[in-house]
Image (cartoon, rainbow, N blue to C red; front, side, top):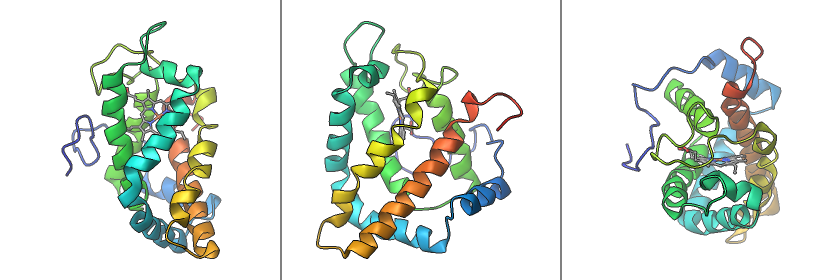
Length: 194
Ligand code: HEM
């Protein structure tokens, strides 16, 4: 278990996800996620793990360049909080490793619910005890999948990886992102509709 502040994957006191393992299996079928994708994600972990900080530099650069996104890290009308950005960055780095571990245990499902809550007003700011903007709008959540999908490619290509393997890893990454963003959407979806 890592000691990153606010990181709670594997914490047995987290609320249980209402999404059960068989629901997750259903999601995997819907997006054609199979064993080959899990293997491709683990292959991606070898490529990405040594470059986590460089990947975060790209993503943080993108968020910093978009005032409507960086506002999520600021008190309304104020400057972004370096402390909050830094705290989230450490968990974001761990998330790259978790995503590429492709370990879909019940504890992982519970943490997906927690990450969703951290984007929504029911849980945002609490992990770091900050008073930033209180909610991330649903309309920004899903479109951010695209930059996170597109910008990972150069990191998968490093070291002269054959294009077919890069494609396999990037597709598996996209499928995982889509399943995660769906799980994170739980607090945004009307009761009974998820
Ligand atoms: C594909 C979409 C997204 C991905 C993959 C993503 C990823 C993450 C991750 C991994 C974390 C840390 C989770 C943890 O605490 O362990 C996080 C937190 C956070 N994200 Fe996102 N995110 C996405 C969309 C967004 C959007 C659209 C915004 C708006 C600017 C945003 C702003 C934040 C903020 C402010 C936090 C800290 C929340 C807190 O107070 O705990 N995220 N995100």
